[in-house]
Image 1: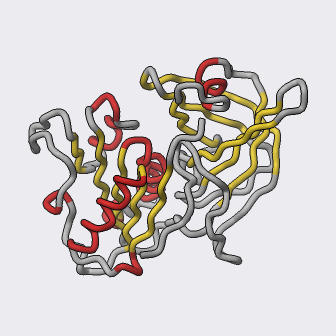
Image 2: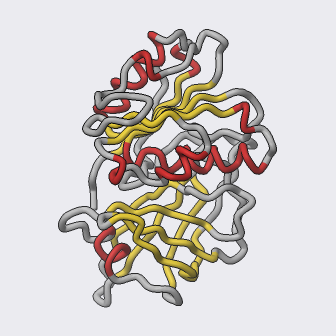
Length: 250
């Protein structure tokens, strides 16, 4: 089953597969922080003004690089949640215990600060609202899928995009209100929902995939493995399933 590397919402490398002539790519820029919010105690939503920005495709990511006074640098990749139409780039950072990058971004960064960023990056896990897609995200893995959802809405083609979003609890799910309002199926493993009792994602949570949509799966390694296997059982061709896995790296 095709799978790219790990540019998830919380960590990853920038080695996603580029498709020359298809996916845009940008170089290093010095971005200005316009907004910082904390939708949950462990996450920070950062909105950046990127000068001479290269417009991204939904599903791409940015690298953020921090440099210490002694020259030490650390960088992490974060998926973009904003659609191409948004004048700012929106990243969602999960604060990890002892995270040397995520801790700074979540606890120290403030509007008016500047950040070194590089992007957009990645050409495999992208969608341009040009054909039907089904997205399955777990936890912060919903972030690049939110960009797709917003892009479908911007293009006036929401019927092309179906989303399933999973988390332990409602409070653990980024963009939960927006996802629910957009009609995403919300799967909570530790809380009942009016339309669904608590439980892990299962075959009944996915639509029939035999019509051949592109299937985007993003989340932890365990979630991605389970969800992509379910997608195949729901009728998806293996070649139509695109997977982004991520894990903590701080």
